[in-house]
Image (cartoon, rainbow, N blue to C red):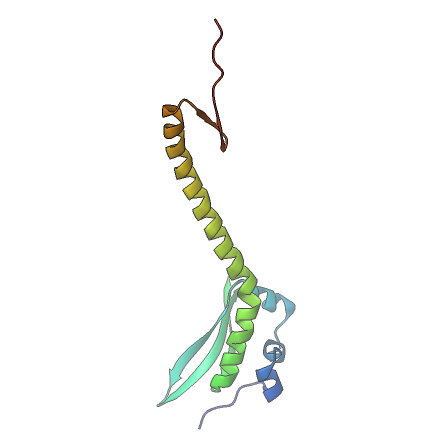
Length: 135
């Protein structure tokens, strides 16, 4: 017989966004979950899995038992995704920004060579024709 979770998770909480609230997490723990955290599944006996919420706080791993109900685990994962969405979007944006900078750098070095052959020089991102020397 599967063991029940230490907290009671109502159907309203599973459908809504109150699951982490019902776990009794502190503000510091929720802030740590925004940075890093996941739901792990561990096999127990035959055909039984238990779920745990794992995250790091102050350099130490914290674990909260979620129970055997996959619906509760899925609800916690959904809420975690919502909490961590801004972090993931920011990470993807930094990666794309870095790729764009690298691409711009390679294009600039190629353009400098072509501009020099055509009698121009590159000043920042604009082409300039050097002044003719008066003698």
